[in-house]
Image (cartoon, rainbow, N blue to C red; front, side):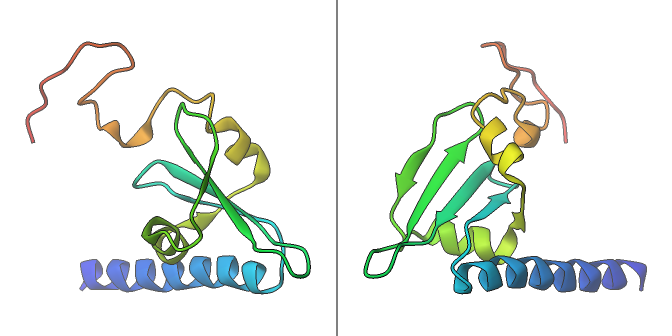
Length: 116
């Protein structure tokens, strides 16, 4: 019962988050959002009248680059991601501590063996 309730809450929270992202995009506002499971942050820049909107992406520890607006990773991030502040987006390129590595890889070249 508790697990079903938690799962239901997570589904509703995801819908609210994706709704916020979609509403800002539809309103023509600049939006920053992330897919924390993949360690990717996105920036949406609305196009001026007659110009195409652009999406930029950052992976932890890497520089920003433009991504095709039809990329499936954008759709996934909108549907499963959450809005973030510009400051967090800007810090993606300098953050070397990847939260999703689960202790399998460290920031050095050493590999740890982890039992699950």
